[in-house]
Image (tube, rainbow, N blue to C red; front, side, top):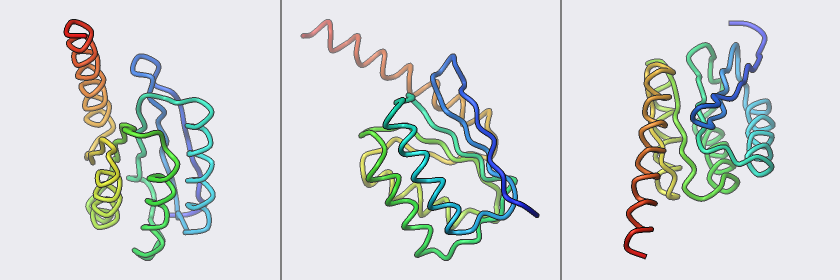
Length: 139
């Protein structure tokens, strides 16, 4: 794989921040990037987040990756919608992350493609609108 890099952009129509990681992702770099991402969401609370790991190698021990999950769990807004895109070599890491975040009340899932992740977030946002409309009618 090679040098590590991050590409990011906003998917405007669903107010979702997308991050794609490339290269060897070591723990120290991952921790710093996790903290930056939390700061970004505290400053600009996007409705969704997609993290695409497919083009990266996760150079973390599971205990280190758990620390990354805790940074997200403690730093993102309550109920944050998060989708992970991964390949088969990353399944153990992604299972740890999704379970940790789900236990903290986040809506989180993992997918094989960014398109599936995007569609799921759009559906989650549609469900929010329906629930809000129903609450307004009864309230």
